[in-house]
Length: 530
Image (cartoon, rainbow, N blue to C red; front, side, top):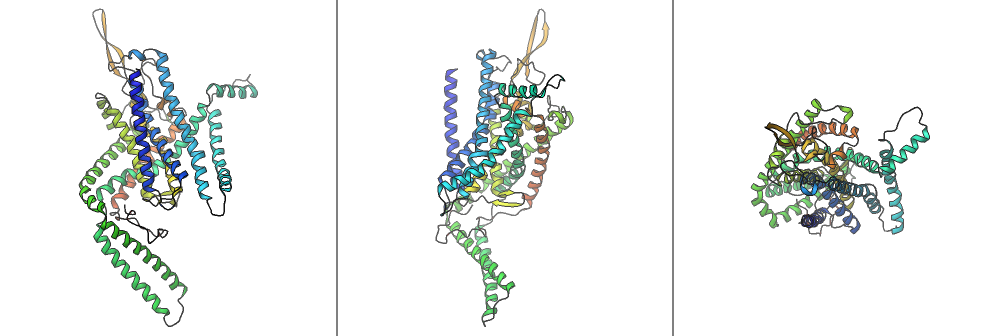
């Protein structure tokens, strides 16, 4: 057992270092070279790392409850004691609440403080003034967090309604139950509330990214030489139009207000096209352009694979939601399903992979990472929006620090919702993993044989251990109801995003837009192409 712990911690350390390395590379890849800040960079890297580590809790939870039992349905020698099993379950629960508390800290305190601190940065302002202003705005976020904790601590409790109980006794019971739960209900309610925001982010970005990412890989980008020729023609047309307007005022007559506005727009367009020309020229000379043409067949294969994964997830999610609609315990229970009445591809695939350790855990990890990276792709393609207003764009080496902070906050919220998405795809597996239990079979003489069957809702409580993830997801039934309807919206947005991505043409080989004028003309622009 000690050797297993050493190996486990060693693997955890290696994975943690790999996650930190990936986060550093990803943030540095998109961070603006002109506006980089050490504090915002560290905050973004840390937040992204927390999101990735938190997403790994689900497969670890499933693995630990499954690892307690043998393949024949009996408990392993070290886990036969109920105390030992309780210790492991509490360890998992502590892990969840630790990382969820860190997420609360990041979302309501650290990221808002750094964001507003950077927003208030000015040559005329001192650091103390920036800190005071940032703390003032951060206090509003902390107030929201406090309200969620208070509601979670008191609202879910079951208070006796007897006639002989006074209002004072009810308040006294509230505080007693709050103390006995150590405030875990409060934290659970706060995280579930954030998960609702994560659901909206997943519907907006993940659903679109699941279609946009593979189709962009499959379709590829425009030919750089053809695009450069087309851009040259656009430059000539704009310059001719500018000369035509300027010719109107050569005799000393001023231009009309309409012509002045048109001239200004044409000059802006000319500057954008000139920047695009320099970027295209740098792209043609770059070595990566030649390598990209070689990698093109692999991108097509990878795009087809990701499309198949997306279809597998959407079909499984549809069948799982249909099962809840037809066979669940009802809307007032959060659409909880006991057992599987309508199976789906993932529910079929996971039990098959359980026979070969650790293929089922690898598949769950791949699905979680798939959600994570498609969310990144969706945010990068769409930008960061507040309703119909685009706040920021995510562009390689030109993303502002505030946009990176928003990106990490959105990913933190999406990670919270990922656990429920995985539960929706494979409810029985998320509840019990690969656990089995013994049931009495047929009798031969005086002896009775036993057979092992997969754990389900009918299993005895002392024979199957439910994952902490499942208990956490169903602590408040009304959240489960909202998640259920959110899954239908997720499916609808994916279908719409898939149609839109199919209708869109190929992307440009570079990213140059009208608001890129802050780039210096003397700057090496070879890094701005995608």
